[in-house]
Figure 1 (tube, one colour):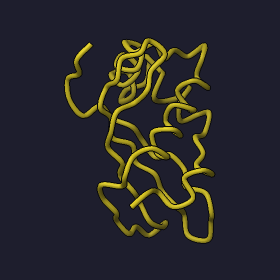
Figure 2 (cartoon, helix red, strand yellow):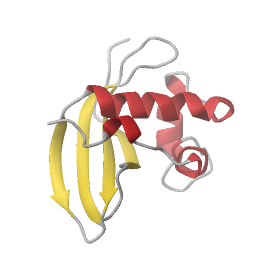
Figure 3 (cartoon, rainbow, N blue to C red):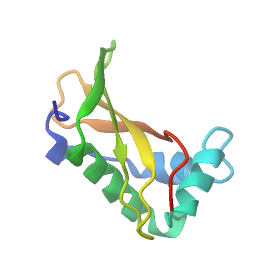
Length: 115
């Protein structure tokens, strides 16, 4: 199964700038270092946002969970990067009750990758 309405999936700027690429964030710093290793930087945050949307559109949903806010979907697969390496990544998307477009909740590396 694919993410419902994946073509409409959105990634909030603050999720990328304030968390996933923020080297000063208490919990996001390790993710910022990870993404930095693959050519994603704060100055080109839109590139990561687009890559995460593509990740959601290209891979199958691996887990679905009902939450009080709506359905939550996990997707696992490779991420296309600016430097051509392909790390495995898990993204989590939520389709809030009453909404049509899923939004990114988080992204996390799955395992060591080959260059």
